Amino acid sequence: MPQGRLNVVGTGYLVAGQITPQALACMRRADKLFYLIADPVTCAWIEGLNPSAESLADAYGEDKPRHDSYREMVERILAPVRGGREVCAALYGHPGVFAFPSHEAIRRARSEGFEARMLPGISAADCLFADLGLDPGADGCQMYEATAFLYRRRRFDPVVPLILWQVGAIGISTCPAEFRSTEGLRLLVEVLARDYPRDHEVVVYEASPLPVCRPKVLRVALEDLPAAEVSGFSTLLVPPRGPAETDWEMVGRLTPPQT
Amino acid sequence: MSHNAVRFLAELSQDPVSMEDYWKDPDSFLAAADLTAEEREVLRSGDAARLEGLLGRSSPLLMSQIHFPNPFKRKPKPKPKPASTPAPAPKPAPKPKPKPAPKPAPKPKPKSKAA
View 1 (cartoon, rainbow over the protein chains, first blue to last red):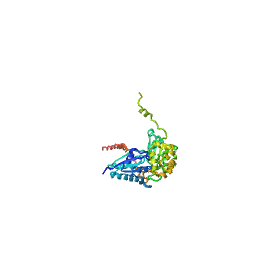
View 2 (view 1 turned 45 degrees about the vertical axis):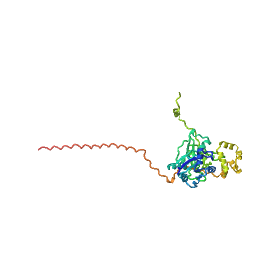
View 3 (view 1 turned 180 degrees about the vertical axis):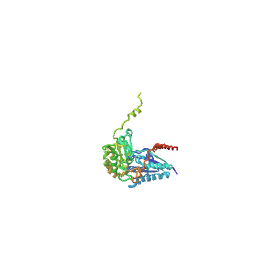
View 4 (view 1 turned 60 degrees about the vertical axis):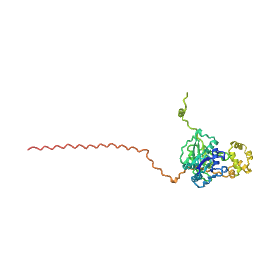
């Protein structure tokens, strides 16, 4: 029996426009293609790419814990791998960023002796850097999942850009049709207000899913965040409250001696 | 959602120059595309609700879940151990026992008189 193999790829956020050539090749040649895609246009395009394409979205349920859905997806992905087939799993965005099923499927496949790899894709953060003109190399960048940021008391630096993922789903452990966590956003404001002024401008960002739509860039005062249009697609950027301090002694030590 | 609409959006998404041309003159761009009048109108509007009606609904399929602890199953905090076991305090030197008062010298017996 031929050896099964698993390739996990990302499709980015813009129908076919952010798929790498590597990912496209894997999706086309796979004996079995699974996909987990947020928008219906990309789904339709993928189904035209490979006749074996099968959506994993039906693993979610309105009141079903998301972790149960992820375990089901992993089993569905691994079944044809165990049957000796070349399998490709295509997830939106980057397949390894805020994506449990991909990492778990690869871990399990390798533990069972199968070849498995992940190819990098374009994540929501990459789209944010491009659309908002943010260079993570300039002042650094810190990123956290929004719910964990709250209950794990993350220590963070308010003079470094702060990105909070899944900000529309604070405290939500299922996958409802509509995400709305007003109380979660109020708690987030309460925590952030300890380090930022309440009128500090924050940005609610959503990458554009279609070429005929602009990305969503909503700038609001921190205190107005609970009333803002925050959805399950939203990522929050909290810009620095000011410049970072300079350690002049360290600057001296890093400066080469003048000749 | 028609096959032509899917193909139009997929092809447009792969060419950033065409996307810029679209935004400069969307009416002309759409007029040249193989789309129905309704599709042109809805795509031109960019309206989320109308796009959803034409193309179908997008769902934020979150692929990550932080393990949120159950507050009713909170384990009690263990009692904190002392940072280090302090050395036992040295026992104080025993107080010297007071010497007993010297017994008084016995009184000399009176000498008896000779006859």
